[in-house]
Amino acid sequence: MRHDGTHRAAGRVRGGPRAGVPFVLWASLWAQPRSLAGIAGALPLRRVYRGADAVATYGSHVSEYVIARGARNVFDVPQAVDNDFWRADVRGTRYTPFQAVFTGRLRREKGLIALAEAWRESGLDRQGATLVLVGPGPERARAGATRTMRFVGPATPVEVRNFYGGADVVVVPSIPTRTFREPWGLVVNEAMNQGLPVIATDAVGAVAGGLVRHERNGLVVPAGDAGALARAIRRLHDDADLRARLGAQGREDVLAYTAEAWVEGFGRALKAACRRGKA
Image (cartoon, rainbow, N blue to C red; front, top):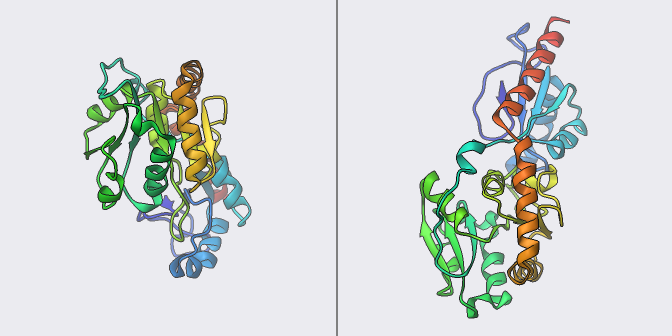
């Protein structure tokens, strides 16, 4: 099996040196990187897509991308977390009556600059609310621009779960860059298990892949649009009933994204690859 991202792998492209060994590609890309390395690798990667006996993808958004580049035998594989762990009852870590949480690496592609601007624009920093930033990264200085944006640094899974349990909304503000577009965003699965509504941008794979649905279990905003992000945060602050409805629906929707479904999806890809490899 081989991954089209950063994972090292073994396998063979049809006609390669290991002929007869089925080759499954695990694909996560859903936009062509615009860096020099990404541009240079576009043609070789197309050959890999076309040569794979089967392609397992992060979801429908990735499937559409690889099919357009010649992939065959393509299978959606639901991205999953340990739902039992993430949906356990917790007391929660809460600092103020309303709390938004971001979890992940505090880096540019995660949209922290737009999030900081949106938080100030929402006016909630003047109303006793807190934005909790959980995770490591060089954006700490910018992200900590106001006293109501609490940077807590890296956290264990149990600590992260407690922050979800003490929050009212999770924000996933990722933006596309020349080298990166969020393949999925498993924080979405984690937070939904805790019944949190999700605010995410259209550059998040969990949005493009269909887990986060606007007005069903979350709110979707354009990537990098601090104004739209501010309005979404403010809206969920002001409407407790909407928060409850979106959070309850997300808690239900994420139950389809299980480890068993992930294994079943990969199993179908492996069987298809073996059949093709014998053909």
